[in-house]
Amino acid sequence: MTYAHITGWGKALPEKILTNDDISKLVDTNDEWIRSRTGIRERRIAADEESSATLAVDASLRALEVANLNAFDLDLVIVASSSPEHIFPATASIVQDGIGAINAGAFDILAACTGFVFAVNMAAQAIKSGSMQSVLVVGAETLSRFVDWTDRNTCILFGDGAGAFVLQASEEPGGVFSGVMHSDGSGADLLSIPAGGSKEPVSEITLAEGNHYIQMEGKGVFKFATRVMASATKEALEKSGLEAEDLSLVIPHQANTRIIEAAARGLKLPMDKFMVNLDKYGNTSTASVPIATVEAVESGRLNRGDKIAFVAFGGGLSWGALTAEWTGPYPIERKVPQKRYLFLAKVRSVLLRALRVVEGMLWGHYGRDRKL
Ligand code: COA
Image (cartoon, rainbow, N blue to C red; front, top):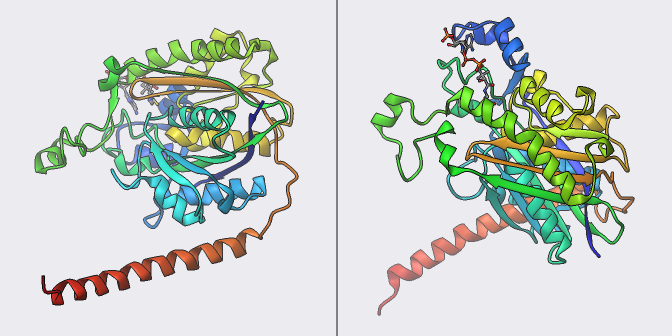
């Protein structure tokens, strides 16, 4: 039997910090209100030269470093993002090129903040079925670019960042045990970016109405989230034959401390079994679960052999959970040091681009002179 182990993890966060006090200079709010209603103290905001893909590349390279793996060995790159680089091409394609995953297929998953948990579940299924050996899953966001900085209902909540996992096949028991995925499109209007897609392409009207920004019915999302966090985790536990008490740690989507507290009550677990770091980063959507995981490892709260659950909810509406046994990095010898590999991959990418330009010129020339 093949198991899907999480063998690498990485995070990337912009340097710029935006505190609640900073936001109170933009809209009518204050630090006390934001902290007591959400738990958030500050969030990170991407610099002009950063984007979802650049953050994703940084987090991915760190994850590959931990896994002791070269991107050459990846079979698949999945990026989950609520703020992708473009409508198309997929952010995953840009990441695939950026890390030199020359043998990997690459695609994006869109399930709002649940996207990373869904993507890890899909990656684990691909590995367990025997069709893939190594898969990179990334959650990457620059939601600050889609926030209306005059809307106090939403601009206090979101932050930028990226997190990544490497999943690898092994015959050793462990890794991702079970996953559950749920959606309820009847609640699609509760949280959305209405314009910019095919239904409402960006126009002067959509810009004037601010429909290219995140729109949210906060109370509705809050009620939904408090309902599904515990139920999804219970479902995933049941599927893997585990009890809530078996869990060393729950790593939930970092949206609001009150939502996580409701999940803890629903699961009858103390809050110290939950990883919470939303005070520092706000809601980083798909990136929140992997960033929290990396910080759990760094702070010694997540260790080899621990039974854990990941749980997330988001727009769609969507929600899902996973249970896993934490593996830690495998003691594999890296074939080529990452820096050297990356240099060679960059040279290859530049040569391919140049070749495409030359090819285009030649074909253009040929096309002009060609007599049919
Ligand atoms: N600062 C100060 N006051 C604010 C405010 C802000 N940033 N935002 C809203 N208010 C005001 C409202 O206008 C309202 O005033 P009123 O009573 O005079 O009308 C009052 O505070 C209460 O607003 P309400 O929306 O009922 O607050 P709430 O307790 O529901 O908290 C959220 C708002 C957004 C924090 C909360 O609903 C929430 O976290 N929802 C889930 C959002 C989420 O997680 N989204 C991402 C999902 S992935």
